[in-house]
Amino acid sequence: MVDESKIVSEYTSIKYGWMATLAQLLATIAQSFLSIGLGMQLSISAIVIRHLQGNTESDFSISLTEASWYGSILFIIHPFGCFLSGVLQGRFGKKYCMIFANIPSTIGWTLLYLAQSSLFLYASTLLMGFSIGVGAGAVHAYIGEITEPRLRGAMASLTNTAALFGMLVSFTLSSFFDWRTVALLSTLCPIICILLIIFIPESPIWLIAKGKHEKAEKAICWLRGWVDSETVKPELSNLLHYNNVSGTIGTQDSNVVTNDSKNLLSKLAQFKKPSVYRPMKLIMIYFFTSYIVNLTPGKPFIGKIMTEVGLRDHQSICLIIFSVLQMIGSVILILTIRRFRKRFLTLVTISINSALLLLFSVYIVAMKNNCIKSIQWIPLTLIGGIYLSGGSGVACIPWMLIGEVFPNKSRGIATGVCAGMAYLLLFALTKSYLTVEMFLSIEYSMCLFGCIGICGLIYLYFYLPETENKTLLEIEEFFTSNSKSRT
Image (cartoon, rainbow, N blue to C red; front, side, top):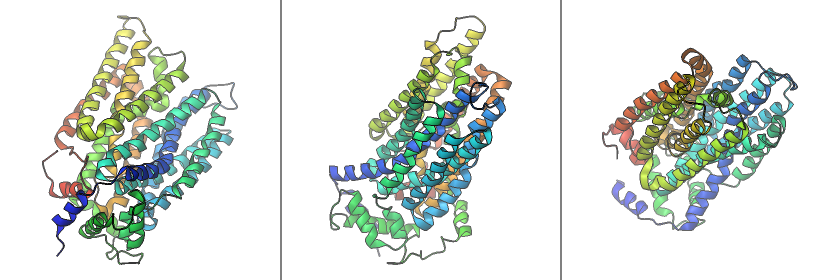
C-alpha cells in the first residue's frame, strides 16, 4: 500500500533553486506567444472597424451591422476549436496541440491582409477564432501541469499579461501603420511561437498518463532547472501517485491508457461527476461576471463608446493608454498574487470595477442632462481604472483557474469545453452589446453592468475557494468533497 502522507511530505519538502524558476519561466514565455497572438486577434477587430465602418475613402467599407458581426463572430467558432483542443490534448499532448493552434492563425492573418470585402473579414476572423479555441485550453492546462504550486499563479499571470501585451502591440502598430500592414506584421507571432514551442518539454502529467515514464522524468528534470533524475525522484513519485489516484496512469512505454478515457462518450460522461460540474459552474459564473465588469463585450466598439462620452480626439492614443494600464494591472497581479492570493484579489477588483461602472453611469447621466460639462479626463480615468483594476485580478484569474480546478482524468476535455463555453458566452454578450445599448442607452447599460458585478461579487464571496499554493490533488479533493472551506 502506498504511503500517501510520506509521498506528499517528501515532495513538499523539495526546495528547487532559481534555475528551476528560470526553466519554468522559459517554458511559459515560449507558449505565451500563443497568448500574445490571442491579444492581437482580440484587438484587431476594433482597429479594422474604426478604419472601415462607413469610411468611403477606404478600399471598401462596412456597415454597422457588418461591424457588429465582425466584432463578435470571432467568438462563435471558439467552442469548436476548444472541443477539438480537448480531444487533441488527450491524444497528442499539450505541446503538439499548441503547435497546431498556430496554423489557422497564420492563415487568418494572411486572409485579413488580402481582404477586399466583409466576407474576407469574416473568414479571417473565423480562422483566428478557431486558433484561439484550440490553443486556449492547452495553454492554461499546460501551465497548471508544469509549474510548481509556489509559481503556478505567477506563471499563469504571465500568460495573461502576454495577451494584454498582444493588444498593446496591435494598438501601437495601428498608430503607425494602416490595418493591412498590422495584419501582415502579425503573421510573425504564430511563426515565432511554433519555433519556440518545439524546444520546450511536454507536460510530465500527460506523459505519465500515456505510460511514458522515462520521458516524463526527463521533462521534469528540464522544468526543474536541468537537474539530475535523483533530484526530481520525490516529485516523480508524487506525480505517479496523482495519476494513480486520478485513474489516468498508463502502462510503461505504451501509448494507451489502462482505462477507457480515450473513448469520447466516456470523456463526456465525466461531466456528470461533482469534481467536474461543480468547478465548471463556478468558472462560468466567474467568466460572466468578469466579462461584464471589464466591459469586454464593448471592446470591439470602444471607439463608439469613447465618442459617446466625449473622447472624440486622439482615440488611437487612448487605446494605447488603456492597453498599457491593463498590462500594468497584470504586472501588479504577478507581483501580488502569492501574497494576496486569487480569492482576495478577485473580490477586491470586482468591487472596484462595479463601483467604477456605476460612477461611469452617473457621469454620463449628469453630462447628458447638462448638470456638468463634458470633461475628457473623467471618462478617460473611469475607463482606464476599469482596465487597470481588471488586469490586476478579475480579467485574468478565471483563465488561471481553468488550468487548476478540473481533475486530471478530464482536464483536457474539461478545459477545452469550459474555454469553448466561455467564448460562446463572450460571443453572445458581444453580439448583443449594441442592442442592449440601443435599448437602455449607454448610461443605463453601465448601471446594469455595475449591478451585475455586485451580484457576481456576492456569489463568488460564498463559493470561490482559494487555489493559490495548493497542489492539483488538493484542489481536486475540494470539489469532490464539496468542502465549505474557502481558504
